[in-house]
Length: 419
Image (tube, rainbow, N blue to C red; front, side, top):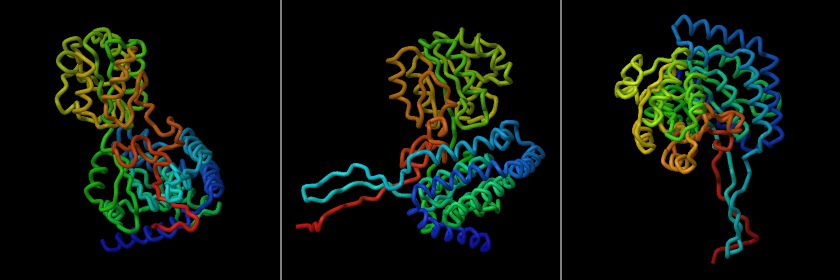
């Protein structure tokens, strides 16, 4: 529809104007705005929860799983989490304007790279309304303007959050339209945003693989992405089995509907009998459906037989694929073939083995004796994350404010001319 394209492009044009002003916004103004936004979310908490309740009701009527409803919910803890993220981002160093690698050349000029905002960043996301606050905060901290396009399942929550954040930011001195929401959930708006060449500088999709592939296929501007979170926990022959139990259980059960939850458990044959005997009853008690290789099923007759598709599936639910391997290299080979380069973990007390695993596994986060659930911008000290990139350029892993900057070369001279 021409009207939808016009609607999206007008937002992009307004964002481009705001981005020019954001690029020169001083640190104090940005930080004050972020703190004002945190306060506004707190003062408007009842209104936000009322709108969120509408989304939850629609989600239940549509038959969304408990895991997806959990991602959608904004309760008191969720409200506080958004406030804390905004406050933490405000306290972080401002990445904009920092000059790296300044050197004096033989010609007498000083040359370095200055961190600068990307410009206009489009965020396309599903389910989690807290992304509205996290994305806005990180974009503003890094001197960018943002255009947010959430999913239909969280439209009421996103609309109220974007309104509260935008108003608080403007009142605190940020330019108008630095934070905008596309409040029409027609899928055509995604295409128009992803093709707004010359107006939008970067697209970051967050959501299921279907959404991300659709954005990548449609986009004519750069996209930073991760297609899925097919994360693994490998229990080595030299693992502390109590730690192994706790880590594997936490990685699967603590919050199964998120991208850093474990989907496959790999167990070294030397400890398989003991691990399965101890861990599987706990998993079943927590409601986990277990799907195992033939060797796993031979040890545990209750385990369903895994099929090839299970090794490639991001369940986002209480389902776990289990495979027994003979060596750490076998585990790495499996992760290389079936993983998504998101987050993978090893449990071992052997230092050399852990170092080899870290060097061999090509993922954006690799854990040693720690749950995959730690792969998160807030946990890493970023305040929040704009997303978790499984790309290698230009950012990788959980992305904070600094990852929403690029650089320009700056040269200082004193009347220097080139001979």
